[in-house]
Amino acid sequence: MARMDAPRHRSARCTIGALLLVFAAALLLGGCTTGSRSTADTFRLITHRPVQASVDGVASNRFPQMQVQTPDIVAVAVLGYVDGGRQQWFAGSHAVFEMDRHGLLLGGSGLGQQWSARINGPSPFDDLRAVTAPVTVQRRYDWVPAYQIDVAVTGTLVRGALEQVDILGTRRTLQRFEETLRGGGMRGRNVYWADPTTGFIWKSRQHLAPGYVAELTQLKPYRPAED
Image (cartoon, rainbow, N blue to C red; front, side):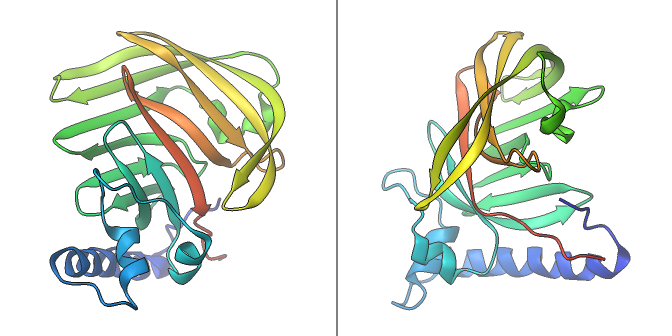
């Protein structure tokens, strides 16, 4: 996953972000025609009638897309902005999830909550292919409105087995990794399914806060233009 930070890309990514926000607002505030209904579902945040991705729906939308499920959000999120490897994914107009180019969740906001996660020191997620023995991950979290800032959490990341994972009818052989989290009130486990040849995370269950897990599945990953 190459960085998209060359000057010639800045206007393009700004335009994409602006167009997404305008288009999302228009779809959310206005009615949907038959032709726009599948695209509208991609942008709309649904809590009572969940949005689940379909092959046709993903194919009909040219933007990168990701299935998101949390305890109170089910949506197909669309990539709206990329800067220096940090990606912002919009689930309707009410939730935003931020990830790095490898598929690691960096934070998010929605439904009156904000979360932030970061790793102190070298991150094993920069190249999961190199993780062959247990690795200690020193994490820091911010949680609002709990007003807990710089909460220390220690993760222990281990490689699992190769598993067959179905994504929209396509079976992929992915490497499973598990990260046990301890500290700061966090007692849980993150699970990642990564491409064994690139380390890119196709599917994951990642904690944003104690008891609050985001399940993420890449449906149409972001592929940056080559310089």
